[in-house]
Each structure stands twice: as C-alpha cells, then as structure tokens.
Length: 171
Figure 1: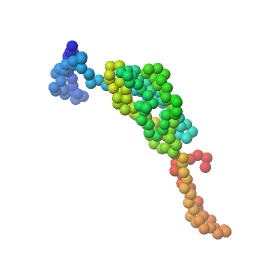
Figure 2: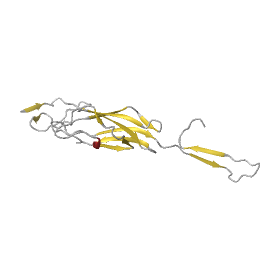
Figure 3: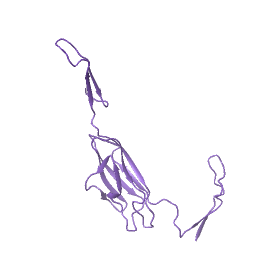
Figure 4: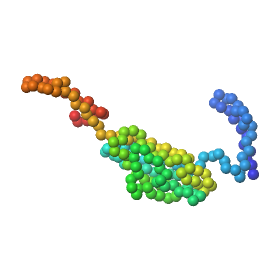
C-alpha cells in the first residue's frame, strides 16, 4: 500500500511556503530514507591524562544487529588510544562496554569512530556513523633552561631562565 503525506502547509522560519511538496507517496514495499540504527557512546571520564589514562566506554545501539551481522571491537576506528585487551564485552544484544586507554605522549582529541554500515538491523537497515571524542594529554611536560652566562668565574653571577611547556605546580 501507499502512504500519502501532504506538505501543503509546510513553511520555513520566515513563513515561506515550500514548493513542489504538495504530496509525496511512499510505497511501503520500498526502503524508506529513514536512518538506520543509531549508536550512543558514553565515557566515565571527560578527559584523560597521565594520572587517569583509562575510561570505561558504553556503546548503546538503539536496534540490535541482525541479518547475520554483528557489532564488534573490529568496528571501532581508534585515534589517540586503544581498547584494553579482552575488555570489549556484550552486556546484551544492544549494549557493549570496553576500556579505552590513551596513547602515551599524545596531546589532542582522541576519537572512537564507528563507520556507517558497521552492522545492519533485522530489517536490513545499515547503522549510522558515530564519532565520539575525548580530550587527552599524556604528553610529558618539558622545561628549557638557559643561562645568561654559561662560562662563570668565581664571584660572577648569571641569570637562570626556566621555560615550561605547560603550567606547573610546586616549583
């Protein structure tokens, strides 16, 4: 059967009537343009550093994989870190967990990306793309020390300048 939708009163924010949308017919036997299963990713940490370099991630699919497809660790494209060995776990058919570990000496935005069509639901719809980001700073700070005179003799003085790569404490 067909579903008729009328858009004759559809207007934009400035009250202009949309053209060429007087009627749209959808054949229920055809695939509709609606997005496939979505994935939400949450993290127990908002940022990672040397002191806290791991975060528990939770992946919640709004529709379980079907059609002989699955959602697995191999669907994750990682930047700035890795998934800790053996931590990717299925809680149920729509919820998965893993531990993300930040790379050493990384300063930037880490990401966990899941490409479009990583899996399909039972109706054959492909999952949508998802990109989760997390701030990471595991880059060790540095200090540069310079002397105004590096060839001192007894009784002479020199100015010592210390420049830190980032703000420090207890110096």
